[in-house]
Length: 103
Image (cartoon, rainbow, N blue to C red; front, side, top):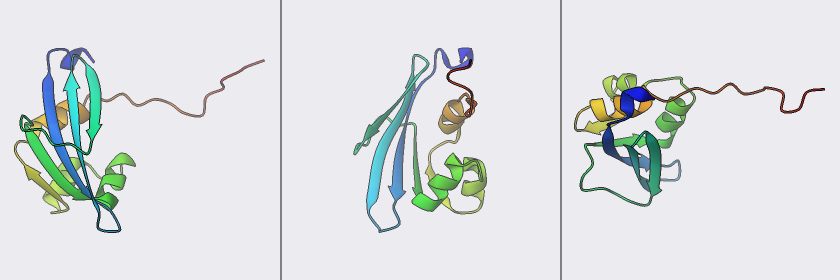
């Protein structure tokens, strides 16, 4: 999106899975490109977010927003919310279920 052409931000994610294991990721946005690095943390991250796999799945399914999760105490946010909003507010939603081949 044009709104994030000059945005450069990294966010640390710490996700606690159902079995108690922990996943760490760095989610970054730079030059209008989103990237994710597994098993990593960034010292330069603008924000860190800690949440359960259940809450993460609910965010992906658009059942809850990050702001709602923070407000409900389901998400620990260390740092400002703006870096997350810069990423998530500019994601495009693609339609699924379209015909790949038409007669």
